[in-house]
Image (cartoon, rainbow, N blue to C red; front, side, top):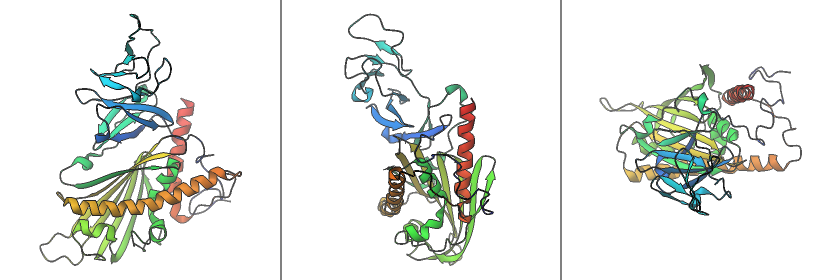
Length: 361
């Protein structure tokens, strides 16, 4: 029997073993790091269940290589970058940005097989993106994150490692009906009872929702210059142009603004997920406001509140992952979909198409 709200067979999972298996497409851009994380000192990071080392050349170009020397498998991230070569800490072998070994200290010749995989990187906004699939399949740029470095915006960025599959986070941030329950003490926004309208714009998932005048979440009042519980009219619009990143715009209308004062504001969140080690996810987040030069103290206060709210998500998602992982029934357990799950169901459909396309390639 199919659920009329979602079009899915009740109890059926679109992605078999989605929470327990490696379920990340390779032929797409994933976030490797915040731009400030990558320096001339090697950075070790697990991405898509592979160990990767990230560093910058002397001209600032970021580099990503497999973090495993081909000689005796020492982590290259434990070495140093000298004259744009990363030097293995074990026997001093040197590798260029293309992953090819350029020097073996104990001999004059370099074996042809002495190389490691290199990965294409591109910078978009405040983040560096990695392509870990077939480089010949690159046919688009990373998602435009230009607003994160736009001086017209005040921007907060943060990071958490979440011990849960990335799909759990992706579905969570596209279904805001949990805000009234999981975030009752942080967001304090209890008017999410009605499911948003969900549709596709090309390959982009979009949800939209209109709210009657109500108190704005205290997490954002200060950033807009409002007193706590200030009554506003708001419209929510979220979109996921890539499995790696989704956005959520809080379009705020100050219905009590004095004549001649600013009335319309935008708060934009971005949720960026990258699979790490199996069962773990790198979660980069952005909270931004279309007002420049917000005081640092105000942004720090806002960031602390946002982190408190996202910690609530993290704690519950990790409990879900741990329980399903330990339960011998695994995914052989009924899973229903509700009317509010339209965006989450669309995520699974997009993911299924991408995984199937890569399997056929």
